[in-house]
Length: 246
Image (tube, rainbow, N blue to C red; front, side):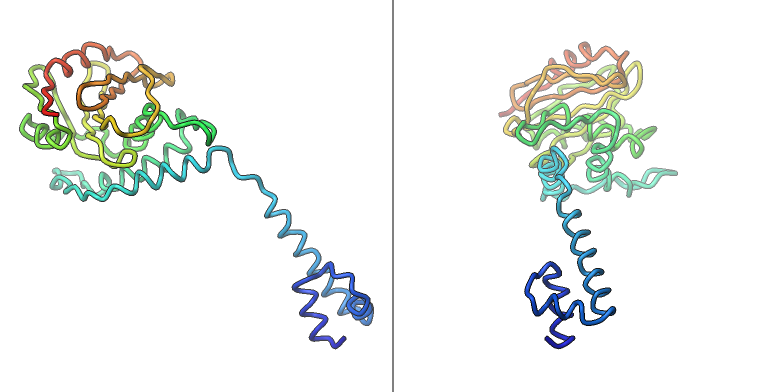
C-alpha cells in the first residue's frame, strides 16, 4: 500500500483492521503518528455526536419559528422625543431569546403543549427593557384601531391610562399587546385569538409577576402585573367595556 492510499484510509477509516493497512501504519514513525492523530480526531467526533439533545428543545424551536412567522408587517409608531422606537421592532424576537433563559419560563417536556401563560410571560420579561417608562398617551381611537382586527371594540376608558398598544407576533400569529398603568406598576394585556393552540390555566405567578386568563367571546384575555397588583378589578372593567363583533 503506497503512502497516499494509507493516509486517505487513515482519514476516512482510522479503525480499519485490514492487514495491508496495519502493515503500512507500522512501516514508519510518521505513519504511526498520522494514524494516532486520526484515531484521536475520530474519538473526539464520536463524543461530540453523543451529546444529548436538551429536553424541550423541539418545543423551543417551534415557539421561535411561530413567533417569527407572523407575516403581517405592522408599522411602528413615529419616534418619541428622546427615545428611539427601533428597539420595539426587535422586542418580539428578543422576548423569545430572553424568555428562554430568564427567571420564570420553565419549559414542559416536548410531549406536553406549551401554555398561554408561558408564552405571555416570555413576552413581558423580554420586552420589559424596551417599553419600561414609555408613555405613548394612547387614545381610545388608537386602541380600537388595533382591536378591530380581533373583532373587539373598547367602549370608553374612564380612569384607565394606556401607555402602549400594538400588535405582536405571539404564537402562530398576531395578538394585541397593550400596557396599562396599574396601581403597583404596569399591567400588560394580551388579546389572543381562541384558535391559538396553547394550554390555558386561569391564573399563574412566579413570585415577581402574576397573571390571569379570561376566556372572552372573541379571544382569550391575558393580564399580567406585579404580585401586589389587584388584577380582578382591571379584568372586570375591561370585560364590561369590550364589545365583540364576532
